[in-house]
Image 1: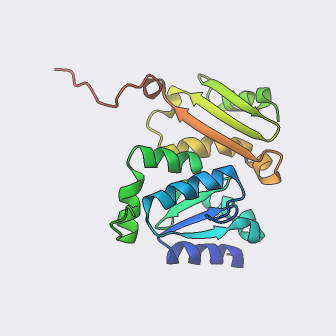
Image 2: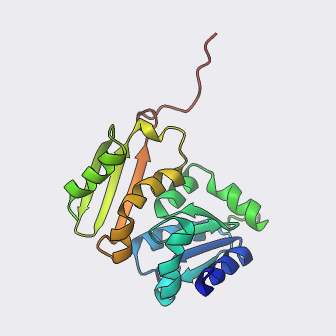
Image 3: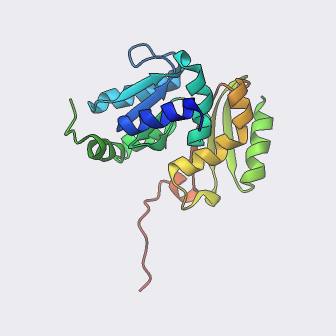
Length: 110
Length: 86
């Protein structure tokens, strides 16, 4: 396993909810990353994020690890959930919130 | 990539698909309806379609591809309630 992949696996193991995105939630660098991080912020659940623009090795390696070729990518309990289309769809159909709550043990809705 | 190239590639995987693509250059939004996606979760649907463009997405030739994928029944707005024959 490459050191980059080990780093990714450690991040996934240490953070129940983690978003790999372009930019930061405060300053997203792409509309899709803005949408996904915006949805997560609305839930009030704490989440970790990695700015892949600042981590080119992760940006290159993650699509191979997750079998998902675009960013952003949301992981809950180490499992790939998907990108902004899926995050938005699951927020709207009510599936996202219980998954986030179960993963973090937070009651949420700030 | 052009819309035609994108549609052709998706059609190869989902021959029955109704496809609507909007966008230009390296940024596209796709709406796809195919009954072949029955029983597939949201993630599998996206992976199957985005995987067709893996190289273009990795090279930046294609920057973004937003995909909304549904079956005909879902598209019609029908609930997923199952009618049981009695």
